[in-house]
Image 1 (cartoon, rainbow, N blue to C red):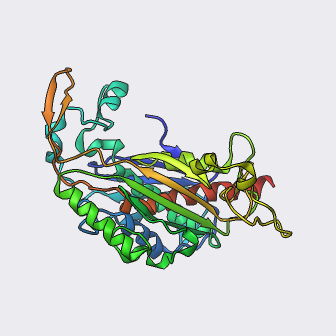
Image 2 (cartoon, rainbow, N blue to C red):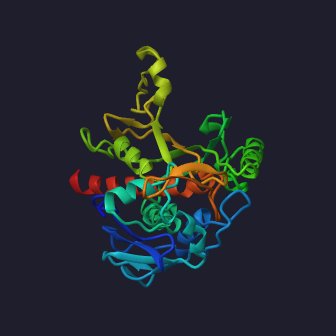
Length: 353
């Protein structure tokens, strides 16, 4: 199975399955002598872990990271940083009913067709549990990018939208509620929506907005390695993501050039920022902001018609512990992937410029 690594200089390779002994990763390219805040790394994992509120999966995992290499006396040595997160609360029996059945909109069918064999317990390698490894690496990348602010939040759940521009939000309120929306009033509506959907045995999707501030000018390359292209790849690699837009995004298609152009101020900043902080594939020093769309979780507690490995039409219903909406737990994952992209380009910029 290829495609387990992300990044060029600051590179993460992950391994492990949802119901295996452990998941883990190897980080290559992290500079030496970086003093690590281990509490901050664990806190990022705590933001992603299951069982943290009534609107997420109730699987109970401590998600404690254990570092195996690349760190001595609290500082990075420049060697590969190896780490594991042990799985402690698997309930593999919850998945025996899909051993030969393909769940609609899951990776079951494609994995079987491609590899001829799959780990059906929790989805195996296709499980979103793998993203915990990304959060560990992203937390280290954040510490490398100490002057950069990376703030993600829930901007919609179903048809409930946070309409306020990010400039008017207080990001310190993002963690004040279970859905991670910085507007308390809108947050309560989102939570009520998720709870109602869960009672129906169904799931719902939503969007995450992420804002990157104090990003140095000059990150990104102008042709194939555009900064926004790599951010798009990073976000689209997250489980359940169906869309990515930055700056004015699709709304920009309804504007005229005279409305959309970001006019320069004498200091090189722009009076508007519809470019989303990136021009020609290169960061321009303005805020980078983007939105990520997450589909409804594929496993639902309602009976559906599907097929089995023999091509027979069968009935199936989801069992076990699943998120009714993945968005609240996706916030630290989005931040982590953004940090990995910026760290990689930051190191490239230092070496090649």
